[in-house]
Length: 239
Picture 1 (cartoon, rainbow, N blue to C red):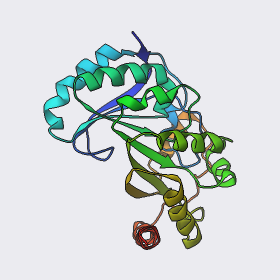
Picture 2: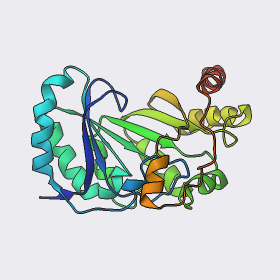
Picture 3: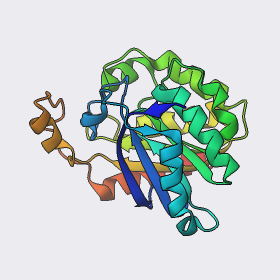
Picture 4: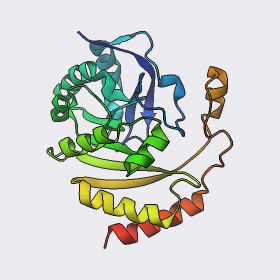
């Protein structure tokens, strides 16, 4: 039986997929995004949960899932712990529990074997060009991101796309226009697209962990402007 390095468990998540969800935050990430608000999950910690232990916890919450709730694996980058993820997703599907994975799509393991046990992918788009991706994530992994999209398109898994909007990085019509084209040309099964305004809620974590914060001086994204950009995006995307 596989064991996982779990950072935390949220029992009544409302924003990480449909319905009421149990959100499992797994440690480990191969990116170092400048706007990350969970830097404490970058590195692996001690493996502290077996798949059976987590399934038992999740089943206790099953009455709250009702028709459309379920479990979301987040992080960190949950696909890094792909062996564990495959095992627990198999067990959750036997319990008829809806499974979602919140991912940036950057993984070197055999994540394709996990797909048949997953109902929803919440895909975080870091950037739509190789240069922009490297600038934001501090890692040269854009080709892996495209590879993940291509593999995902071979399935019928529902996809929700998430794009963080950051002042002076991608809060402009040119990027929004190119984003709409990128999604239309590269994805199938997209059911929802969300713009998330950049916030500074993770700043104290950088200080407590004594980790340099690249965006320490950057302002938060204005929510009204973010919504205006989203409306412009929809005009382009829905043409």
